[in-house]
Image (cartoon, rainbow, N blue to C red):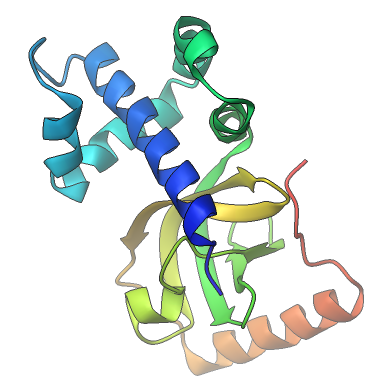
Length: 181
């Protein structure tokens, strides 16, 4: 199950405005480039702003300082969430009814990640799948930032079997992370 329409709109609108700001700070756009123009860009162009943001998190504070009076408390929370993001390679193990299970390939931690609109299986097809994305807190959930780089790496059946076994053990120990503090 994805975010509600209100949650989705809050996240997407807040994130796009932040990325638009980032695009200017990175000198990607001419001064007359409008927000409307930005919204019409291909996702790869927006991803360039996202990548710049994740490499320059000090811009989050700058954006907040410049726009604090115009932002709602919910928008501020969304933006603050980027400071706690985890940008890595993940293995999407499975899509469940309420969330998907992602394994952080660096820390070997499992995260319960809520899809934004479409679940990961609809986006990527066959699971498990290896991807690069950023996950972050949103309200009392974990979401991904809306950008995915699929990998061409295919997992061997014995590796998938081991990951599923490891997931079961972690689940039985209540070690699945549902919230980024």
